[in-house]
Image (cartoon, rainbow, N blue to C red; front, top):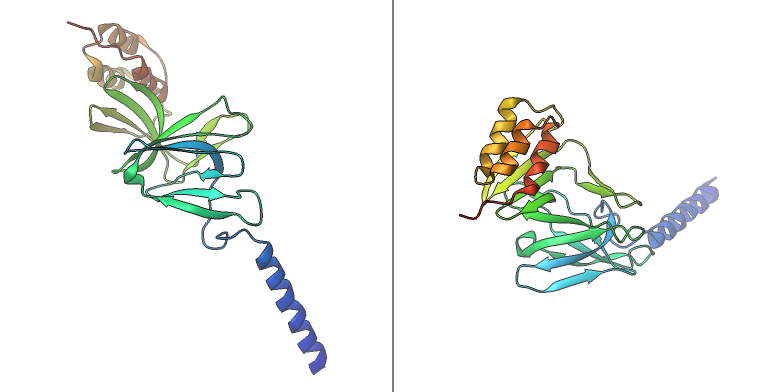
Length: 210
């Protein structure tokens, strides 16, 4: 009976060691949400591009940006960690849909935010504490609940419940951000979209030149 127990213990130990050897390096230490092709635009002007066997781990919250080598093999490991404060933006895409790219920026007050729209002096973002996902067809969406953020020349405006239908008060609030674009103001106040689509209309901003 004692011999059988020892043999069983040795077998279990061997099995654990084998499974550990097959696991990608760092896999037990952290969970990477998704591995994407992409470009990292650093604040200093340098650009880091990752494709082939190298990937960017989908960033989340206020965590460091992780660059991964040998992404889909047993030799997978995080090759570099980049402080989010040193990143201007990142552009990500799924290897199966290289024509569909998505931009993320780091906003210190919130964390990594998905840039939905951008125009002169204004940008619209979505922020999800649980991160983001890019599907095989290139589409992107937030994981779990999210908020929307409008950055108007450095002033941040936060919007929750963005899936609700917009009312006149909400439309006027959005229109007031772009008073110097009367054409867009007219489009916004006369629209009948949900709140998220109304906010995304700010991407059409084209201020009048006086």
